[in-house]
Image (cartoon, rainbow, N blue to C red; front, side, top):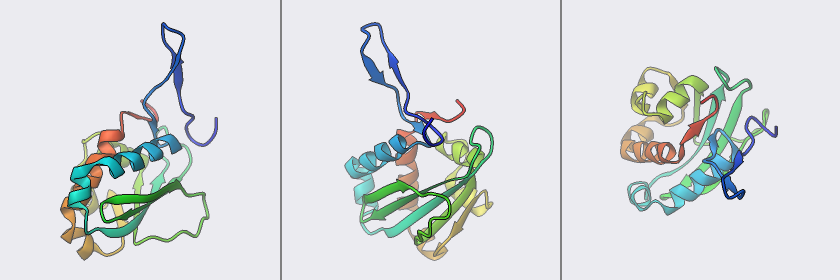
Length: 156
C-alpha cells in the first residue's frame, strides 16, 4: 500500500474497472478537492479576496496510524497548489491547522461545526485569527467544498 491509502477500484458486472470515490486522506482525494474548488463558482465568488495558504496537520487516531500533513495554496477563489507534505518538510504557510483524525472526520461528515472546532481548540489554528474571522464565509465555503468531495474516509 503506497501512503496511508491506496486508490480503490472494483470490477462491475461488465468486468470494466470503475473507480470508487477517493478516500480521505489520499493523494487522489487531494486532486479531486483541487479540481472541485477550481470549478466551484460559489466558492470562487465568496473566496475572491482570500489570500492565504494552509497546512493541515492530522494527528493519528482511529484508522489513521501515522501523522499526515497536506498543503493547499488558496488564492482569490482558486486552489493554485495542493500536495501531501512529508514529515519534516520545512514548508510554511499563512495558516497552520492541527486536529486529530477523529475531529477532522467529524468536520468532514458535518458532525462538528468548523468554527466551533476552532473556538474549542479541537481544531488548532496558527495564523491571523482576525483575518480568519473576517473571512468566515470563505472558511465555511471551503469546508463545504471539502465535505462535497468526501464520500469515504479511511476507516469507513
